[in-house]
Length: 440
Image 1 (cartoon, rainbow, N blue to C red):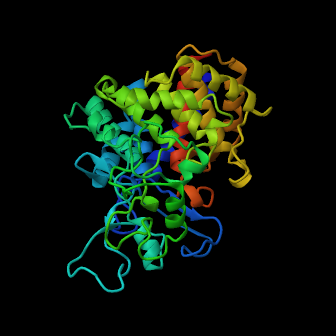
Image 2 (cartoon, rainbow, N blue to C red; image 1 turned 180 degrees about the vertical axis):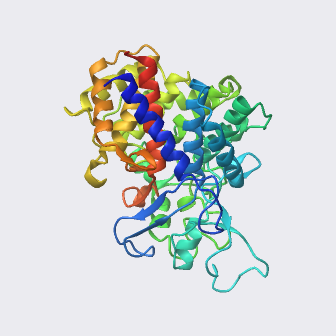
């Protein structure tokens, strides 16, 4: 594959992102500056309803694409065509922010009354999907989630990149924004963490930037009973109408969220200001010795998202140590298929190979940039696989979107978010990094 040919794919991907960025707002449907993405329920599920999908506007998608593009521009300032996309996306990203904390969904009017008896006299905005209709009061109330650490790290990183590129002086979240929510001396535990991650406290970052229910004396029996009877009044896991709902009433530790926070703090030169970053990194480093550690994420069902996030934190000196990096390199080279692809778990349709390969390639490139040995052939084969699955049209070059997020826990493998634009931006960034690091 020649450098000229790679450049054609890269520029074609930028054309696709230009052509697919929304040019106008239709309130409650789509918003200027964002890119299309979908929220899909892949099988019938109680209270949510039948299998279906709908367009969804959220902070994660627009912020992540903005940040991929910003990193491309910072790598190569001759890419002036990126700057208008960044400006338009940033105006949309700001709509998810409140006091430097970011919500996954916008605050919108509820689709229905959310309480049987006590509904406010004035309009009360709630977080909810844009177009994916939720029917029951209960499931609408579960959608009203508070600000979270993942979107807050992504959104504030967008502010940081805007400052770097446009010379603005936007304030960004400090380390304390994340440090005050950590898994130490809590009076609650989340059932999924307890059963599938580890039973002891981790001292790592928590996902939700909001108080959880506090038991006078927590134990696993109380946790199980309240979770099982979540639909019953009095359950500590039950959502309340018009109130932000921390899922199941208990905060959680996610290994990808932690890595994303570490990357944000490192990129913005705030790691040393944090009292929790070293504890979070120590937790991830210890976890890397566990079998199939990459499948421990709550909200990220693609097996290679964890590799992507951890390698990125290592690349930016976020606290991931060399031992963990070497383990990732070993696992990535062993997990790569003969055709250059990576295959996620069987729970995702067709093992989600395009998305998995994009994450795996980005991780290998980050590790190699920091001096970890990755054979050139592994990189070459991954790039070849992705280029063989590119789609070329009048709008440019793109790749079919894979799973980059999920509803987590019981919805981890069935309530999924995809976006052709997200996957295309990720792969474009991989191509740019591949061109820089090698091999021409």
